[in-house]
Structure formats: structure tokens, C-alpha cells
Amino acid sequence: MEFPNLPQQLKDRRAFLTAGAFTIVRPEMVRGAGPARLKAGLVGAGGRGRQAVVDLLTADVNVELTVMGDLFEDKLESNLAWLRDANRFPKTHDRVKVGPDSRFTGFEAYKKVIASDVDIVMLCTPPGYRPMHFEAAVEADKHVFCEKPFGTDPVGVRRFLAAGKKSEEKKLTVVSGAQRRFQREYVETVEKIQSGAIGELRAAYAYWLGTPVIQQPKGRDPKWNDMTWQHRNWYSNVWLCGDQVVEQHLHNIDVINWVLGMHPVKVVATGGAVWRPRDAVHGSIYDHISADFEYPNGLRLSSYCRQFPKGLYTNVSELVVGSKGKSNCRDLGTKDINPYVAEHVALVKSIRGEGPLINHATALAESTLTCIMARESAYSGQEITWDQIMASNLDLSPKEFSWEARMESEPLPVPGQYQFR
Image (cartoon, rainbow, N blue to C red; front, side, top):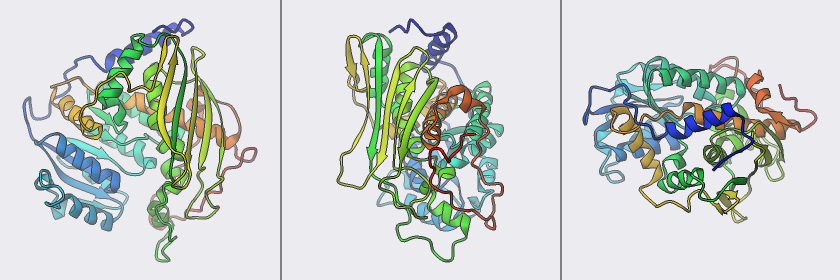
């Protein structure tokens, strides 16, 4: 597959990214070669975090969970009990070895998990914390399983990119939660598309039309301070979740970036909230965004995500159209094991040097920025370029991470009033 109008530097970069995923590079060894028992620590003991632990322990019998950290003690303890349930998890519960002195809570919990003797740090908090936590893990020379997305604003994701560069230099394994990159149907299909199976690519489409994530339908407990409320209801707060286009639709947009081997150069998007009520429960995010991306070779990606109530039309898929046919990006491959487990099989093999060195820090950070471009274009009503997002000073992080911090609810962005910066 050729892109005749692609600048040479992007052709070279695309070739590097395509080849890099399949090049055997022996990473730094953890306790030597062979079936060494690896220790993992979890940062963020929510639903996604606890399931990631199950997937990791299922992937390899020589891995155990030894440390956990979360903002909230009740979340940590309830999900630790869930992981230890022998009836639910007869094959993995006995490798959950988190003692009383290895459970940490509060805003500094991640530091204590990373400072322990774990080999793998699992970053599964809301994504607003991802850059800070990833940077600390890399500085401590830890291998990382990193849930997507890799941040919620340009400043944070550029911080992640800088730490990602260090992780590459250190030959650390960084596996993302973008499990399609480990799903055999996708992997084999993408290889064939990149080898010209459907000819020269002409257009791409990405969809996540699903149902809303409402975490606190009953509203705020009067006992909760601002920080507690926003974290208990994190999906409705853009600084923590990034909006649906970043937190969820990233899966589909990342597939297109992966197929093309590059990120777009600009986007025009539109969106709003036609279903979500204007209240604190539903927060400051949109319930639909459509985007028109343009890539360096002129190819366009039409992207659409929405979260409407159950019972309405749904569609989670990708489509690429070439001069000789089309593909949904998985129809030219074969099925294999659960991709959520497969990503952890690849993680452990990469750490032990039994497979290719995997480091998705740069690729997934660029896909995260791609999604942030769309959000900022929809919020502002402006065309947003890659150069603008790379120069943006938008930082959504609170000035203070403490239970006493006052956190005002953000208004729903209105194009023409909201200013991209």
C-alpha cells in the first residue's frame, strides 16, 4: 500500500512504527530469563483495574499481585475481596497476595505502589492521572500496563510522551489497554491492509455509538466533599475522563491511526448534549461528537461517537476503504484468545525477553492527542491542527490534590463561548 503524497519523513516514521511492532528486541530482564515469578502492583482499584488484574493473572501463572493503591479505602477493600473470591476465580485467587501493609490509599498511594518491589505497575485510575503516574513509574524503571487513554489534555499527554521517550531508552515494556492491538483478527488484518490487500487506501470511518456511563444516578452524598464527589462520578468530569471521544472512542480512532501508521494533521468536529441533562450527575461532557480528520496524504477519517439511552441504535466498529475493496479491520484475520488476556500474555513475554519488546507509549499518546483534537474542535467550533494541539497550554489538572480542595463544576462547553487555548 502506497501513499504517494506522504512526506518522506512520515514515510520513514510509518515504516519504523510498522516494523517496530514485529522486531525482536530483548528488553531488560527481570530476575533473569525463564519463568521468573513477576510481582505486579495495581494503581486504581476500580472495575477496570480489578478486571485487568484477573486478565494478567490468567495470562501467566507465574505472576502475582502484591500491592494495591486507590484513593478510596472502600474501593480497595471491596475489590480486593472480589479478586480473592475462590468461587469466582478458582485459578487466580491464590496469587492475590496483598497483605495489610501493602494497601495504600489517598493521593500519594501511587508513589507507594511504585516504590515497592513490584516488576509491573498497572495504571488503571481515571485517565486524568495517567501522565503523572506513568512518569513516576518510568523514573522508577518499572514495566507498565497502562489503561487508555494516556491523559485528558495536551499538557498532560505531552508529559506522557516525554516519559514515553525515556521508557523507550530504558527498554521498558509499556502495554496499553487498547486491546485491539493484541487481537489476532485485528493484527493479521492490519498487516494485510498495510501490505496492499485492499489496494491504496481512500477513506476511513470509525464509530462508537453506545450507551451512557452514569456512575452516581442518585446524585451526591451530602457527606462527600468536592474531590470525593468528582472522583466518585469521574466519567462526568472532563478533567478526569476526557469526554467520550477520548475515554472510549479512542479504541476506534487508534485502529485507524494504527492502520495508517500516522496521526492526522487537522480536524473539524461538532457535538453537544441533546440527551444528557444539565446537572451535576451528568456533568460537563457531550453525549455526541462527529469529526472529520485529515491525514498528511489527504486521506480523511469520518468519526462519530455518541452515548444515548439503551434500546437505541448501537455500532462499535471501524471501516477502511481501498481502491480494491474495503475492510472492517478484522475480517482478514483469525480469532484467538480473549484480547484482554492476550495483551497481558504479550506484556509478560516482552518483559522476559521471550517475545518482541513492546512499547506503545508514543503510539497511544498520539492517538490520545488525536481524540483530544476532536474534542477541542467540537467544544470550540474551530478547526484544530496537530501543531496547535502540540503547542497548546490547556491543562485541566486541579491546582491542588487534596480532600480540602474546592472543585467547581465545569459548565457544558458552548462553541463560540468556549475558547481553545
